[in-house]
Image (cartoon, rainbow over all chains, first blue to last red; front, side, top):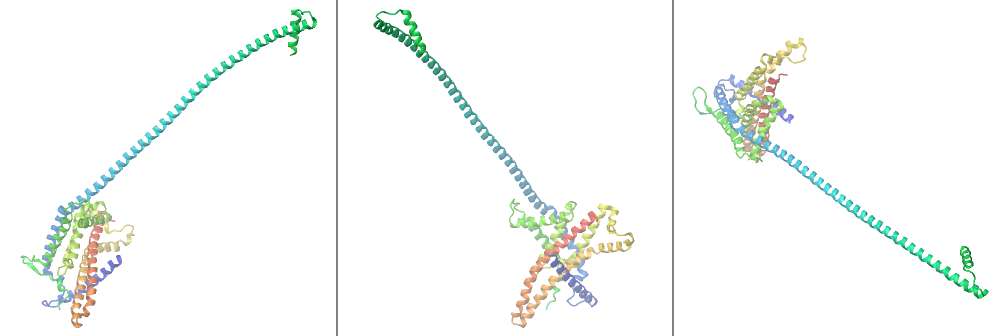
Length: 198
Length: 242
């Protein structure tokens, strides 16, 4: 780029020097023929400068007052719109984040609630079962003790009956063997000692 | 055959007393003003949020110059935007319209480019004086140069400052003259060689002219760009001194 620029500049300057030379040579000759550089004819200068000033000022006013404000306005509007859109997008994103956070929180709460509920139910069931077990245990214990008492009574009754039968049998046996009925006292003491050995 | 320089001839179209004739040069200045205005105003007629091709072009020229001023002059250059924009458009359209066959290129006249460069020079100097007062002249005293070199450096700085309008105007003028002269010379060869070789010899200069015209469109843009960016740099110097 710079290379090309330099190149064209050098070429241009060389041409200009040549042109100036030619113009100067032409100026030295008497006027009349074609050729020479029209750029060096000073008779055109006032007109050129005058119309340059007029055109440039008109263009300046048109650019300054008409064209540039329009371009600037549209670019400004676009930048404003873009930045407003970006801002809105940012805000919406924040909102979405908030909603997502709320949703997450709700979900976590629901999960915690459910867990609590499950735990409570489990506790309730456990307490219920414990109570039932306890009741069954006591019921069983009373039933067992009642049964034991009944067995005990039966045993005592049975033993008393056995003693009665043994005393009668012993009396009869002794009467048969000896021919004389033993005293009640002797039989009792004999049964007592037998009972101790047993 | 006509001289390649004949295309630069000023032809009065409407006589105006006092030497202010409305000429072909004035006509093409008028055409440039109208085209530049139509280009921008027409491009913006829809004020579309999403621009079409025409509006895009208008906006990119606006932003091109806006960025150029921001980068080279800074925020203080903002208020010179319309002026610098006008300079760019006037030179660009002068250069580009000059490439229309049969058109007149007003930027190929040294008096036009010199008048513009001198106006830029005077304006920029006045801006510098208005902003810095007499302190503006410290611009000609480079920072950090040893004092005993001042008698040498200060005249050099002043001469280089005064030569700005000359280099600014001659650069544009010479590029335009060289380009258009070259195009005319090769166009002349088309007829010369073509007549001598039953048309076959005309192909080479035609091919060269096809390349040259593309090259000249690039030069038209680059020279408008150079003229404008140098104006920005001079303005920056005046506003910020060193």
